[in-house]
Image 1 (tube, rainbow, N blue to C red):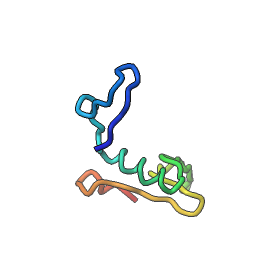
Image 2 (image 1 turned 90 degrees about the vertical axis):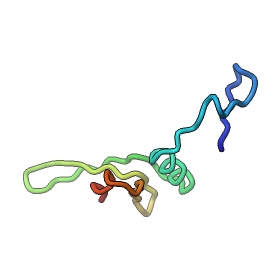
Image 3 (image 1 turned 135 degrees about the horizontal axis):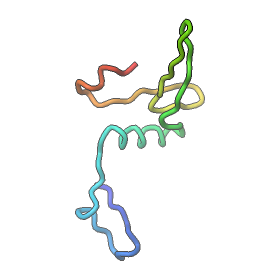
Image 4 (image 1 turned 135 degrees about the vertical axis):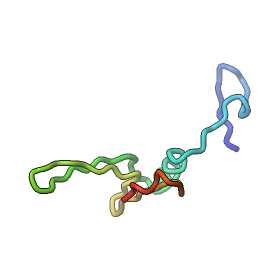
Amino acid sequence: MIAIFYPWEGKIQPEKYPLKKNEDYYNDLFCTSLGGQREVKHDYKYGAKKSYVKVDCETVDYVYEGGMDKRSSLDSI
């Protein structure tokens, strides 16, 4: 469990301020550990159309797409 310190209360109360451990939490943790940038947008063209892709984590050499193993992850690249 990670405790968050709120100085105005003067003590650590992890049960009062629980940390939500969702996909963003784990992607932030992973990307920070690599020294990367989160949610980087890359524009591209195909034919006469334009679109973009957002990657969860980008470092100097690689891009990473993180996701929880569930049905909504099927749109990942």
